[in-house]
Image (cartoon, rainbow, N blue to C red; front, side, top):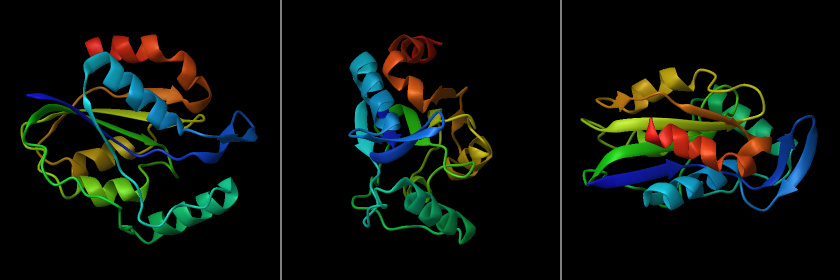
Length: 168
């Protein structure tokens, strides 16, 4: 048995400590790659079939509408079986207080019975928001472990924090 990282991440224009910056790699992807490097975990990136706008303000408008409509956006590729994994790391940016809706699309399709789920979130001040409550609904049957919350502006300095959390 091995570990798996299921994550959503977005590049493009992002919010960092009061200003907008363009990034080539999303913050959550940076953390997911640390996990892969540290544990050897397999990576699965959840990607929407229709990309979000690269403009931050337009992106958050789309995300807000999806949340309000309880949408399940189509994703490019679906993961259908996690039976070979013991520990599932679930990573995402905090969008409007919870997971981006493509993560709902993916996670609802999986059987988490008997799995350990370790959530991690990137954010700019809002931490997990209500996502832990949503994860309990999405990952039915899983043992949800203590999560890791990392400000997006600090992801490139977080490798040791990630390593310590994994080892807990």
